[in-house]
Amino acid sequence: MRFSIWQSVQVSNPEHPRFGQAGSVQGINPETPNEVAVKFDLDSIMVVVPVADLKAL
Image (cartoon, rainbow, N blue to C red; front, side, top):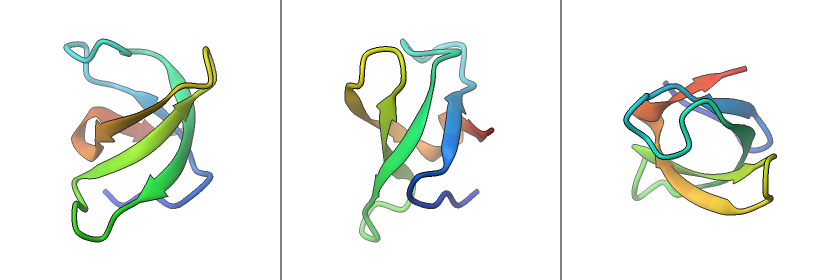
C-alpha cells in the first residue's frame, strides 16, 4: 500500500510498540518506499514506521 503526506493512519501490527495509535504521514522517502514517517496524535512524536504495520483511516 502507498500512503500520501497528511494521510491519517493507524498502527495495525500488534507486535509494534505503537499498536493501535493513530497519526498522520509526515514524510515519504522514495529510497525507502517500505517506510513512512508518522507523527502520532498521542504525543506528537515522529517515528519511521514500516508501511506493512499501518492501515489507512
